[in-house]
Every structure is written in C-alpha cells, then in structure tokens.
Image 1 (cartoon, helix red, strand yellow):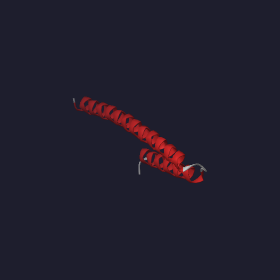
Image 2: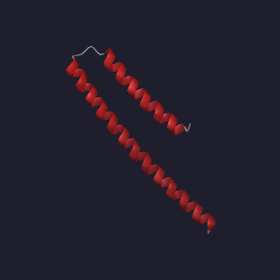
Image 3: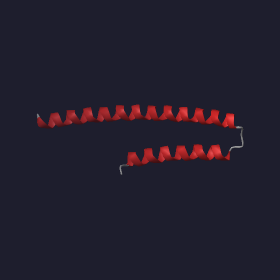
Amino acid sequence: MKTSTKIWTGFITGTILGTVAGILLAPDKGANTRKKLMKRSNELSHDIKESYHSLKDTLGRKIKNGNREVFEEVM
C-alpha cells in the first residue's frame, strides 16, 4: 500500500473512531448529540472534499510535468 493511501486510511479511520468515542462518552441529551454529530459529519465531509480537490490538483500538475519531461526526452 502506498504511503499516501496509508495516511488517508489512517486519517479517515481516526476521525470515525474519534467521533464515535466522543458520542458514546459524552453525557448529553439526544437532540444535542444529534446536532453535534450532524455538525461533525458536515465538517468531515467538507474536509474530505477539500482534500480530494487538493489531491486532484497535485496529481494533475504532476502528470502534466511528467508528460512534458517525457516529451522533452523524446524530442
């Protein structure tokens, strides 16, 4: 498994486990817990989308640079 895949897997797993532990250990009303859970899931969704776009941009640049280098070597 690639290092970046391991990092993402660890990040997502840690986030999920932390959220579940926080919910189970927090003495709060059900409505408040649901609000917190919804807020945290929205934040997580936003973080994942942001990371996806960042990774997509980075890979796009690397592919473009790689194509340019191959073209320069061939010519």
